[in-house]
Length: 106
Ligand SMILES: [Zn+2]
Image (cartoon, rainbow, N blue to C red):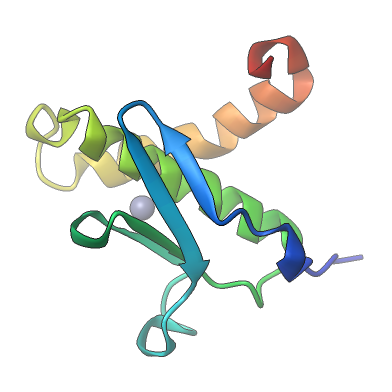
């Protein structure tokens, strides 16, 4: 059974070293097009909250990884488009590792 995301559980912000990233519901123009996106100019992650819970959480982690890459200046180290491959590969693996090893999130 697919569980819906409880909109009350959406964090207002995500802290990464040196930055506070706002988290907001996805804009109308991106609805049904994207699961989420990170806008560096606004320091904001937008997430589609009408997707199933697992997708919303995965998207939040995915966009947080984009934010970390941006904040650490790693975009310059990655060839164009490679950040998407890196993030799309890493986010489900990282989520799985964090769930299986809670000591890593202490
Ligand atoms: Zn992405």
